[in-house]
Image 1: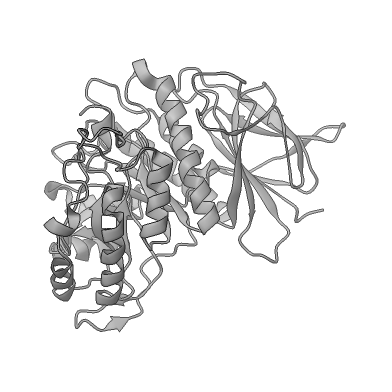
Image 2: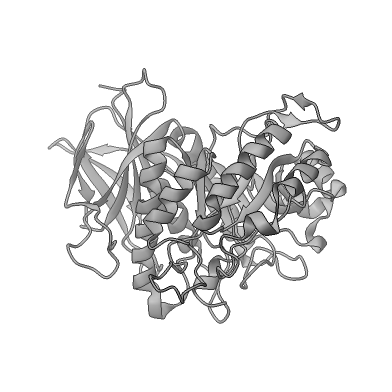
Amino acid sequence: MNVTANALCCAAMVLCVLAAVGETGTSSLKPRMDRSKLLIGAYCLQSNARTDAHVKAIHDCGVDFIIGVPASDRATLDLFAKHGVGAIVNGVVPGWWGGDGERAGKMREINPIEKYASGAASFKDHPAIWAVDIGDEPSALDFPYYGEVVRQLNKSLPGMPLYLNLYPNYASVAENSGKQTVNQLGTKTYAEHIAAYCREVPLDYLSYDFYVYTGPSGIDRFISKMYDNFIDVSGPCRRANRSFWYIPQVNSRKGLPYTSENQLRFQAYAAMSFGAEAITWACWCKGWWINNVLDDAGRQTPQYAKLQKINAELKRLGPEYMKFRTVATHFVGFPEKSNRNPSLPFSRCDSLDAGPFAGLRASNGAPLLVGEMVARDAASPARALFVTAADDPCDQNQKDFAVVFKAKGVNAFGGNGKVEVKRGGDGLCAVPISSCCGLLLVGGLYQ
């Protein structure tokens, strides 16, 4: 696949703690997943990876859900229910994929609303079903019709969460020329694409995929675009109180090595500095590219152990992290000029003052992505910062250093649990961190 096409066929799950439609078509409250938790998923499950042992291995890897399970595969759904894994199912309603944009604006014609009504009418529920797939990477020209589809399915499948994923910002945009008919976004800018989604599609989340490790020749440009994509999506999510769901890569493009443990770590933690509430890895089984978690024969690759380790870190951080929501993201210690900096306006500072934290920076001057957070409980005075070490996103020269700041009554949490906050005689706090790692600092409760 070329760089633009790496997003194709990719999507992220969207889940809600809502009622699900029963076998008889009546609504019954069956909470399938807890959105107060940080969610971890993966994409694609090929047919030779659906045995009891395979599904147990999904659970043991710390994966909460899989996207791309046929709703008709009841045996696999039974195994998912047995091992506590959720399924985002396809085959219920017509599929849709934006592709290269040739069909942009034609979804209503190709998939009329009657097809959605008939699909919903024949739907058979199952305890393992957490959401129904309604498409992937549509053009903005189809967003108004997607709004109609969502409203129709909310009536036909009351309480059943619906899953829809958007393009990343390296999808092609519309040109002013009337001769330009093939485009993916259907807008002149990515920001307009996101604004159109928020305006037209009545879903309470925004999901997209971005694969930063596409090859050494373009890595600086792609790191910059990754930050731009975070900025373009996190802002609208915060303003509209939408959840942010993110799909990073666990696989790699043909000819490239396995994505490293630290590269997995950096993608997840960077997204969390922008407020991500679900991390959905691409891919568990063969879907696109190579070096997925399972090979074509359904055997575990080296990515399984790496992902299991990173997911365990996310699970340990999740309970404390999800007590807060981000209100801003700061680029602390980033150089004034760098090919890796965002091209969009961004909040850059040499040190950060936020809430109870003063003068926060890296002890060695390394760049930090810092998500400024407030408590979800409006009555709580607690404030938090989610810090990602952004000095070595390509995992070429890992360093150990510290995040330093002044504050009273601070707790720190990392991927291995609670972290000691060391205090100097000058009142300066220091918390150890390593390249590509994440750190949650919680203050304001222990004055």
